[in-house]
Image (cartoon, rainbow, N blue to C red; front, side):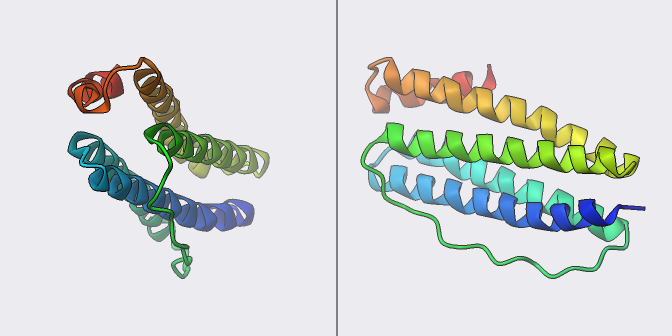
Length: 160
């Protein structure tokens, strides 16, 4: 059985994941407007992944008999001054999500909620990868390479 603190935090995490989805969609729109289609595609895929994370949490809640309403999510920016700024926003979002999952895991552990604690392990591992990817993208932007040329390196950088 899922503990009450974990239930509340998991429902809130659905909103957090959907908010991350919105953030990435906004960044994708920014890159589309800049005609950086490879970057736009990369961030669109990130958005889809974040929505998938939300769906995974929803499925876990449903499988464990938790009734809940979908939380409301606000609008995300779609304009940035630079590509670096957009990626910094993505990096900050990933760091925030990491902290949220760590708080969730701590709450589950403190409540003796092993089921939820075990479930969260995958997300925490995923966050290590996500933070590493955003740091690598910042390195790519900071390398001085033209952003159009850098598109050829996105898949490799994100997959390292």
